[in-house]
Amino acid sequence: MSASKTIQTDRLLLRSITSEDIQHIYKGLSHPDVIKYYGISFSSLEATEEQMIWYRELEQTETGIWWAICSPEGQTFYGAGGFNNVSKQHRKAEIGFWLLPEFWGEGLMQEAFPAICNYGFNTLGLNRIEGFVESDNASCKKAVEKLHFKHEGTMRDCEIKDGKPLSIDIYSKLKSD
Image (tube, rainbow, N blue to C red):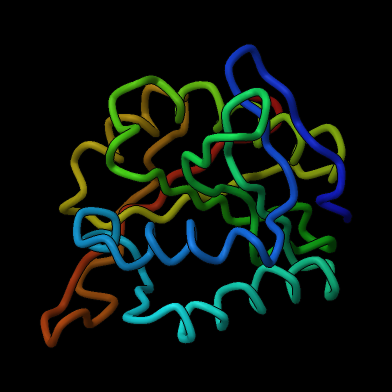
């Protein structure tokens, strides 16, 4: 499971996340609009190194693969997306995705998400891709549904964030969908 394989779409280049991306990762995962519905955040560049280690360890342990989502020539960093919690036994993985706010509403998720899913189904041999979305994140839920992920249910008050319980909606897409 190597992310050195890039994915090219009409408007995007999905490439390996490298140590040089730390500034971009920090910009995204410290931005209040991005982290509002995201599971992690970082308050410093040094703290963001934890995320960079996580990306590397996913590949080393073959439990995931994430890409930097960029302009076709690789000059503009839009966000990141990929898989974690890959289970070879059950042929499933969890998909994750985030974009810098200045690129929201440009249809980038609608282009990158299917490319990532195709990689999961065709290269990783997945049968099921799961997405976990905070129940209050209406725009993400709408986008995931537009990508033909099926809503399976809601885990009510299953996590605590900022001292308050939050619910998570579960979505999935099967290779046969």
